[in-house]
View 1 (tube, helix red, strand yellow):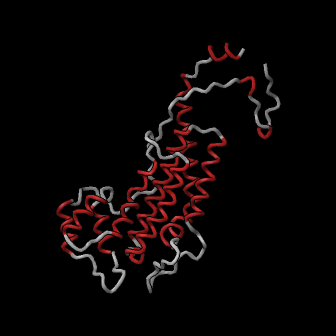
View 2: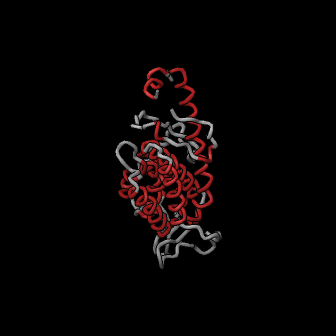
View 3: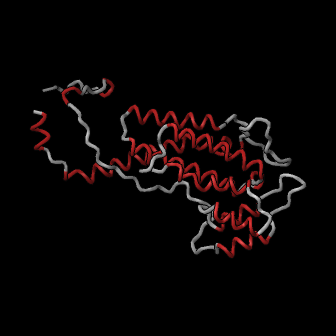
Length: 266
């Protein structure tokens, strides 16, 4: 009976409908995760001082992270959703694409806030942000999310390079050349804004010289259509690849919660 049904039931007429439904479900899950982690991102990743003994708060800066959010809380939320996907036997390829999208949202949200916050643009904060990012990256690697077919951690390029920029030497044109090479994912508008906002971390450090900013503008002219802010809600294309499963339908029992007792096995 099972073999006969599979051979004679053609789903070709429903492929577009099923594909659209899969995309809608995917987007709904992504939006749900984004909404859940959004309150954690800025206080937990940008404001939280996770390195013991390093205080990155400047005098006169706005009050930071009074809700107790930290990077561990964010990683725990990501782990919760990963386990949820795994428990439902979602294809690993789709899971990796989903978390690449979530990490892109994290990346864009953090970079946009960093660009708007002069109190966060200094050397010690760059160290803290990079350390916080490394915890997320380590989690992704431990869960085998960052593999060749879906390079999940590429989604963090902009905020990773911004944190590196805050730590780099920025006093001569030679340093400007190194900045252009290291921060290749940041556009020129973003580089210029971060360098203008950069605050010396001590009285022995100077602000970024105009000569450095001019070198970057000459080396990498601002392209037409370039935007300062990233779009956190930009959805990347998802690929639902076909992966056949060796499933014996006669052994499948619908969960009792679905109330499908009227179904009968043949």
